[in-house]
Length: 126
Image (tube, rainbow, N blue to C red; front, side, top):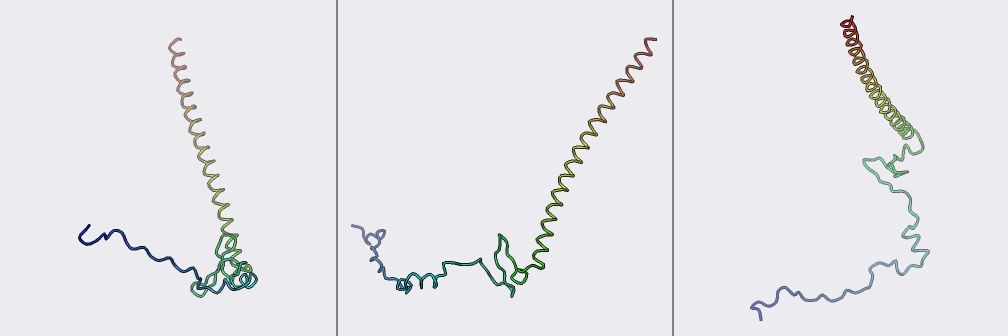
């Protein structure tokens, strides 16, 4: 038997009472649906005096919800993305054209060098 008792085996706690503190279990189904609000809307919050609502994957200002600046900003962002994609495509085309130009230039220099060698070889024959 240990000197101070078995400190590593705590006493078992008594089971908790299953009585709920909520009075919702006493309500009927219809009253519970009204109380709990089973049909909830989009999440909304108020930050710095401006109310925002989550709509179609983005936080939208409630004041601009009926159109106005939000739609304009969304349209401009979409246009900006289209222009960036077009810009990337044009840069890719420029890179391809520069590669083609450098390849053609290298081939041209090789042909000119070969032509000069043939000319000098032909002059030596005569």
